[in-house]
Image (cartoon, rainbow, N blue to C red; front, top):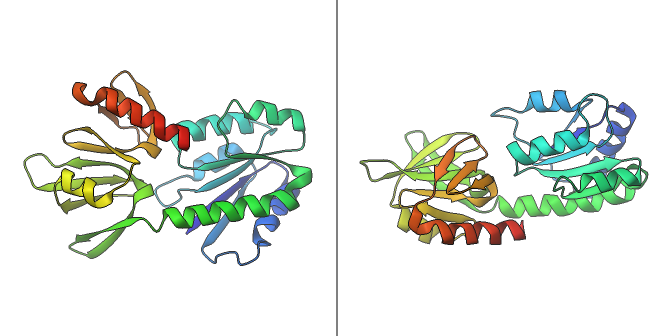
Length: 238
């Protein structure tokens, strides 16, 4: 399921934006569009079962505005593709204080939203083709790479623990072997018992990594320079 949220305190604009997405040719059936009349209502809706992939938000709104909302999204949910909507071109300049994927003038929604959304759907679908099957007592679980926050070696065992956006899973495998099998530059070994997904790093302060789920991971001294370099390289590509 690809979940899309639209936030605007003008209900007419909400429905127009929704119609722009629903009108995309060959729109996948698994695209779920939800609308919210305030930033506060949207934030309160986010939970374990409601992790959004794309957020369209108006910039100028009563209460919390789009810039404030965007800053929160960038800090707490950096995996969400953020797109600003505005009726005024000068507000687009303000949006650059937050690292948004796009900004779209409302007067151009009909022509701009469909190609931008179509491109994102393809991008998300491609990301979701990269996954790992982990066997559990209840059968196999498909864990998408993009949902993995970090992978830790379970102390005193031959298992690793996948910490994801939704749940935690275990697999009997060594970290070195796992890194070889995943073969993904988004994952980096920060110390001998922990791998992190760069896409879910909020910030790096000294030798401490702050993750999207609120976790803090200490980078080993010997790996600090290499980890900082790889994080900067990946952030430049995201």
